[in-house]
Structure formats: C-alpha cells, structure tokens
Length: 363
Image (cartoon, rainbow, N blue to C red):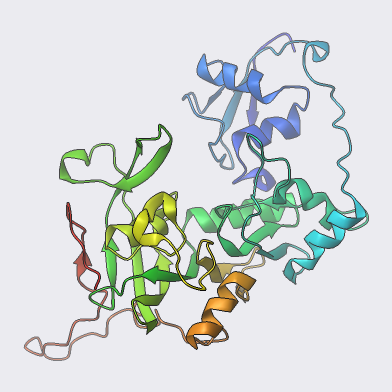
C-alpha cells in the first residue's frame, strides 16, 4: 500500500476488536507492527487515537496508513490451524449448548481461555476443533479466569461474534456465579459497591484491589450482588451476580467484605487457605448465563459444577442441582406505591455496601 486509505466498518464487522479487524483485512500485518502504528497515531478511528482492543462500530472510519510490503511482514496466507484428534474430542466434550450461531462450553478449572507467557494449551487454540465442515472458525466473545470454571460463550461465526460482543458491552446479560467462601457475610445478602483499582503488589505483579476515596480518579466502578445460599460451620455457599465486568471483580469483592473465596490465595491470603478434606483449588464457578441471542431471543444455559466443587458440595450436603434464582427480586423493578405514606421493607440489595479500610464483615 502506497497511500493512506479510509475504510468504513461494515455491519457484519460491528463489535469486533480493532486488531481482529486488521487481522481480517490485512493478514500480512503482525500484531507488533499494528501496535506501533497505533502508538504513533498512524492508525486512527474517526480521527482519534485508539488501542488494539477498541471495539469497532458500524460506520466508523478507520485510517489505514501505507503498510510495509508483505515480504517484510508475515505471510499473507495464514497457515491452517490444526488440532489433534485427542484435543478435538476434548473441546467437543465441553460443549453444553450449540446452535448455528452460539456454542457454550463448560470450561474446566485450570484451562486458560487465551494464550500467554508459558501458556501453550488454551481454549482459543482448541477452537478449530469445533469447526464443522465448511464452517467458520469459532470466536471468543468473553473470558473467564484460568482457575474459574463454568459457562463460556463462543460465537460460531463473525456475525454472531459482533452481536454477542454488543450484548456483553450493553450488559444485556445476566451472569450468576457460585462460590465457597471462608466466612459468612453479614448481612447474608446485599450489594457490594466498591470501585476497583490496579496496583502492583509486594511481589511486583499487578492485581486489583478496592479503591478508597482518595483514589477515585484512577478507580473503575464495580458492583456485585451476593446471596448466601447455605452455610456449613464457618464456610458459606454464595451466589454472586456481577453488575459490572471488572478483572477479578468477584474475587476482590469477596475478599474486601471479609469472606474470601476458598482457594484464592492471590486475593484471600491466609484466610482463603483450604483445610481438612477441602481441595486446594479455587472454589469459583460460572454457574449460569442469560444473554440476548443473535436471533433476538434469550438464551439461558447453566453448567454443572467441576469435580473439585462437586466433592465439597457433597461433603457439606449442598444441592449441586439447585435451580433457585437468588436474584429474582433484585432484578425486578419496584412496584409503584399507591399511598405515598406507605413504607415498604427495603430489599437486601437496596442499600449499597461499601467496604472500608480494615473492615471485616464476616463472622
């Protein structure tokens, strides 16, 4: 390419990441080269500087500068991705729902969603094993932590990826997680409204933590609803509903109210350590998801507990097949009051709960 080109984002491209857009239209351009063009402002969207993670919108204008010759980049033809018969059988064994647009997996704990340093086996790399004859390569549309198990939605094609990505961005979803915590929250149900901030820990690695009033400028709002389902001695089975989607939000919020998730040494420290017959694994599972399907209907799906959590649920006598909706009242609009003087009892989610420095609300 010898001159600047202005390209419009098409309808079927809406919602995909900018780096994915370039990968689709300019496969010879490496990710590193794209990052350099973004840093220097040579690539812009509607005249503004953006990051590779920017989600494009229909009608946006992408400025594409003159690109180096293909010989200086990677080959234009992307090598065909292959998976072994064993990996193909494995990724297909995780499928709990599939239609022409959406695939839902029950991701096992310990399997990363995407690759990274020293991470060679991951869901994204196994997705070619889900390709049907003549079909498109499935695409990731959201993430789960490596050690978190449960519902993971995959788009079966580019059009579905754009629609699902928009649903997640617009929070047109309803996610419920199950967790085992060390400590029983007081109150037993409520709303954690605590902004999160990324900071380097003592070990030098970055992690999130609750931000305090003097850090509001750098913090990102984060809200979680919680409901105690059952308890056994000093441990509680919590249902969690994140109303925002911050990194490690549930883990940081549970630790902030003094009830860290069992097995979460990163955020819970010593209080999160397992003991007795409880396995030394993170006890956090993406139990259920309700999301707007690309065809306009609602898709609801739930995932069985992983083996290490099944063991604990059985040991404590918890019902792993429980179908209760702990947040049914929390998501219903309040009924209009007929008499202004009539006072209704507040729901447990009406009052915001904000952790304080040194606070511990568990017992």
